[in-house]
Length: 357
Image 1: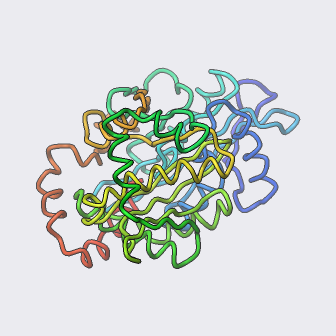
Image 2: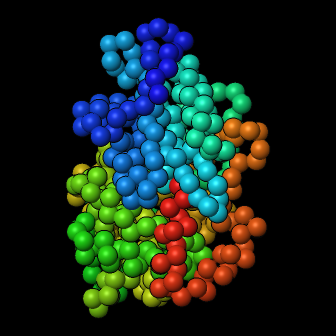
Image 3: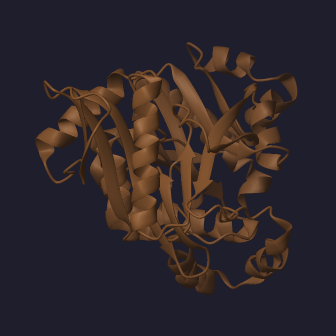
């Protein structure tokens, strides 16, 4: 797709993510843009496309001299249960429009709408980024983000945690838990086993194992897995991204045994230390739905909640797709999933989740 912009000096096209030079140019633009996130990188789009077999469409706006002036990573989601959608960015918590001006942002939004119509994707979801202009629904009430600076050392980090949670962390550190980091095949297998049990217990389907492997492959040294073990058995694990001095603990969870061991507390405290050793100075605790236990857990660690603004629109004016497990209409399915044998949930879950985005 190539289209003229309102200014003759600007053009819009779909990026070739198979071109290493193109990917490098995108990376440079995302790195310098104040709203850029790892989910805007070509690496993320490629990992999602390979790991979940969903097609990527990365829109670029360029000036006459070839400089990038706007970017929008889009993932074409297909789900037999939840319909079709165009998402920015697929499986990310960010990834909305990056643009040098409001006019360019609106042009990217218009192009996304036209693309969605051609692909028969009824819903478009833009997660963060610049406002797409009139006609879009903006929601800043559903999701919260949690970010704060990392302290200088372990003792300062403990003091940054409110007193009650600090006591929980100290108890966790006294449980003799072993910490390991890496991103090899064995690490990914251990992580997947823990994560699959964790999300099954929450009543949601697990993502395909290929998604985790592709993210680690695409991000290389900028991603790893931290595993907490008790007597040699993995009880908690988190896959994190590292970018521009920020650590993003992205996919994490614990087994049934993790709660009594306080393994999740040990895991996140160990990750803070590990991230400092990697040169990070900020910790992004990820998004949580407002009013949930996950949001309360992060507040207990001393993180202040910040609303995340997402934008949606439909191509035919109908209601957008709903994939929120807190939606009352999914309550029966969530309860049933929690009771499903782990082996079955791990087999069926990837088939369902690859179309959620």
